[in-house]
Image (cartoon, rainbow, N blue to C red):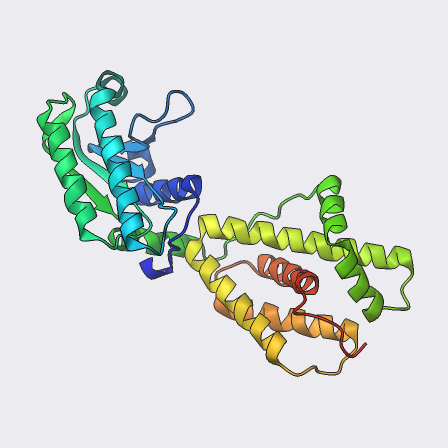
Length: 303
């Protein structure tokens, strides 16, 4: 996973979680203290290190408009740097005598150099205000995955043979999902498997729905914990979907057609994601077949 493979768009908590993993790789977990934000917020510091580095993560909601993303970064940095003065007593107690040398905002991308100068200037102003726990060499920085290439590579190596947790899907969730997509999937399965009894076809439908939910959950876990591999997985799925839509029908019966498409997708994912444990690949491939049945790319034209 190179820094180019890290997605630009993140949910705030997901980016905070990933940022913490990067910081722990850089400084070692025993030297990193996360700051809980459930009680009175995080005071402008999400985690700090024993060497005097304070980190704050920020994932802009705007990822394509450089000006808007930069404005969001500047505003976030300004607000949180001012918290160092506002919450001086609380933070000083939290640090227990540790002097802060660096305040670093981590973002998924950094396109505008003016963000760097803005954060540096604001950090200088806060330092000049006489905050007692700031070291004489205190600086404010903005960093992105480009600054964590070795840490990202290390996380990638840890993913070799990774087993993604298979989520438990309760009956109510399964039934609600099945009812939501009922008509479309029922129509396809009835056309593809006309000899099945109503009971057998319902069991088949529930199996596809369950596989789809499982696949979605596994891919979401991958997106949060292995973003580079997630991008590769999604690109592979998209290419296979395009092949399915644009390719000619094999003329096989519905059962064989499903098996062939599942095997093709599984093979493609295994080539793209050799570091992922095979059972996770199988679950994603099986679930994606259900997703394609639901969303229309896959149908039984020869039935």
